[in-house]
Length: 297
Image 1 (cartoon, helix red, strand yellow):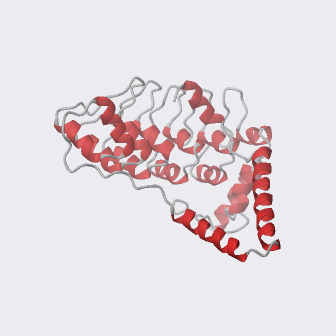
Image 2: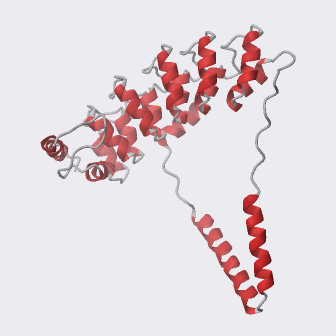
Image 3: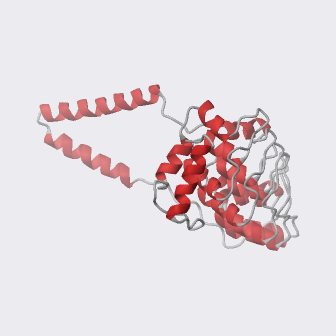
């Protein structure tokens, strides 16, 4: 991942099936229907039975299980193999490398460590092993991302908690000045966003372009996260470098994230259902009034 890819992550939209893909699926369905009609027309029941058997056999075929790790790792483990093991979750390879005196902060040409790789993949046991052996929880790669950024990007809450317990900075920023909250919001990791907020991070932190997590949530139609951020103090009138505040972003991108958030979570009188937000009926009505007066609804 380079700087351009970080920017692409920031502005990525929810993926929608292309027309070509839909047409291809229609052709497959038509072909399947034609085949079945042909079988029935000729009265070949036997062929139909055989076809069903073939389908059952195809369903039974599953990918072979990964090869088990050998009971004992023989020979030295080099850095590339160590880093690959962090991605694949091979704890014994990791242990062998560390037992032989390997540096837990060994990294590749992008300065990406085993801790960052295992955090992205959610291999919590490896994350904890590396931390126990002295891996730097705040080590930065070439994009200034730390393992916390990568855990948030992958939605790996358990890995994030392990990093946090080892002193990782939850407010650290990468080269685009994006905080872990920005990353979790852009990738739609609701439970991670909720945990970061519960940990006391600044919900109004801005990136290089002046965007808060709320700007990103509105732009990407993450309406559950929009609601969560608002409930916990996100500044609804914060302006970015181009000066639009989140309501203006809503109109610019042609989405109704805020209205969806309000309606979906019952601001017409229902209580907030988030465990972090025990709002009363009067409080939810007041919030709706505030949103309306600020031009959000």
